Image 1 (cartoon, helix red, strand yellow):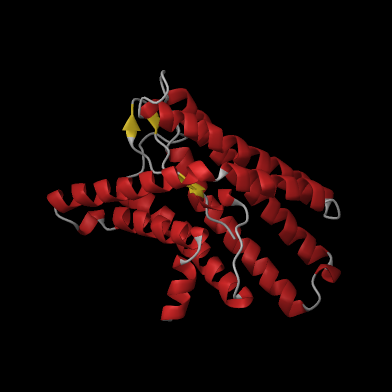
Image 2 (cartoon, one colour):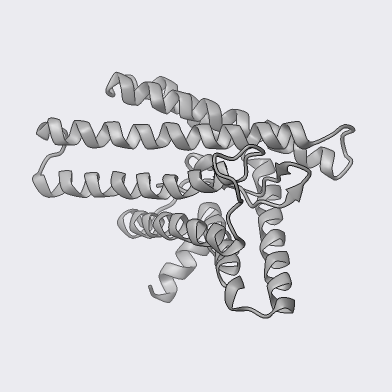
Length: 250
């Protein structure tokens, strides 16, 4: 990765978001080898980066709405199951933003009231979006293996399948963190900080790699699907894990 690649990434909104996400989880991943004092500092820095990303997402509503309209009006030629999953995913992503905005505004006392309900709602919407995205990728893989004509060549088909498999791994890693932050998680003990960092780094690394491939192939950037970087950084607040950042996908 040369200097030009680094500049190309940092010049874009999505690129900066992915760098911040990767650093945030990387800091959590390094906590087991840090001293007690350094561990607290790493977690604080990680939390601050997550908060910065949350604030940046205050401007994502209109781009997300534009993407949702594109999905609805311009995906009619797709497989009906894929199109349905696309529409449902964008609906969950679109609803996520106001839930997060209200929760954050209540936390900083701009709005009155308890923020827990809205943090919980945004977490559930994020988890739903991840599940729908995983189902979509599995459906696409099924179609690619069943209908060779979808891809122009065997090599292209294999690349598409590989890309969708990476998306499944990426979203599954995020989904494990989302389930872990639920007030009633499916398992007894919450993940340790380093494990949250590991799952986040797996997801971030795949998303970052997909972004580099896109930039190198297009040499040109446009903002699509702001919810691509949606995700959460958990911090105790009663029984609710607070939201800090958006999911990474291709």
